Image (cartoon, rainbow, N blue to C red; front, side):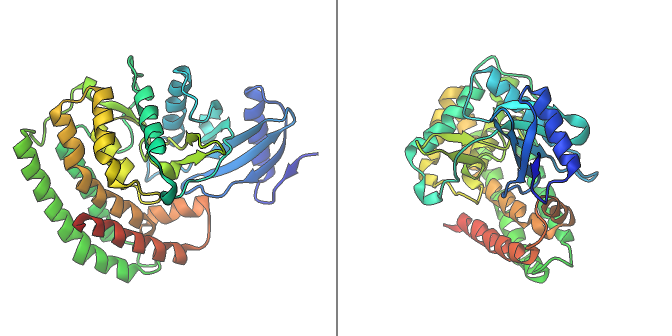
Amino acid sequence: MNRVEPQADENLLALATSLAESAGKGQVYALSRLAGGKNNQVYRVETEGGASLVLKRYFTDPRDPRDRLRAEWEFLQHAWARGIRCVPQPLACDAAVHAGLYSFVEGRKLLASELQPAHIAAAIDFVLAMNAKPRAELAPGSEACFTLAEHIATVERRVERLARLDPEAPHAKEARTFVATRLLPTWHAVQSDLSAHAQRAGIAMDQALAPDDCCLSPSDFGFHNALADDTGRVTFLDFEYAGRDDPAKLVSDFFCQPEIPVPLDYHATFVARVADGFGLDEKGCARCRMLLDVYRVKWTCIILNDFLPLGAARRAFADAGAWAARCAGQLAKAKAKLAALHT
């Protein structure tokens, strides 16, 4: 008899069974919701053959055209074709219902205080292995940027979006004040600094990266999307934004994601190894350094997504409830992230 948790209905069980059977994993006998999905619904699947799998149902909305399933599926297929095993195995997918089935990864989230040089090295090894030539011809990643001007425009769109905060969001008034009095002035200063740094480095704002200077990026890359097992081995997860992108964006995202902050003490080593592995010249290294504050502002905006109507819709899809507490927490994180620019 099938054992299904209350939050998993019969249609979901049928979907899990269909995907498991197409992957050669047999009948599903148990299905339970996993905590932690921010944009998607994630379930642990148990099969009669003894396999533990993961079913992901990806968020979709007419206001967000990104194909999250395709991005993750193609990135993981490329990884497994290369023999890279520090990521889940892609097993089966159904594009019509935006769902994918993957191998289950045992492990736990690392704490920021636990990060060691070996963890940073594992992250670098992963991105270098993904980018060993010949590289796959993946589509551009989410918000991919190939000129400095595109980086600026991407963040500018996020900043402008914050002018339309949901008035019904908890703590909306405080969030509006923060955006107007702290975020906007800081963003204007960061743009001015970037322009000056680029001029000194001899990089035109509209100078596009050559194809060979781009990389395959996991996007949203960091230890918030990783699990460590009992031996310390790290497996990286969640590639729904992955694709071709600027190496400087990969580096900046890695150091700016707020959930499990990576100390900036590792930044120079990370850039040096990526530069060596990707074959970046001095201008490529300069881009990695000069875009760091741009991405601190971008991640401040991302943190505030819960105050936007679409952000609220994603969170409701993934995990309804606790909106007030989350908004308060996100506002505090946004303030801390922006404050890092002045330290």
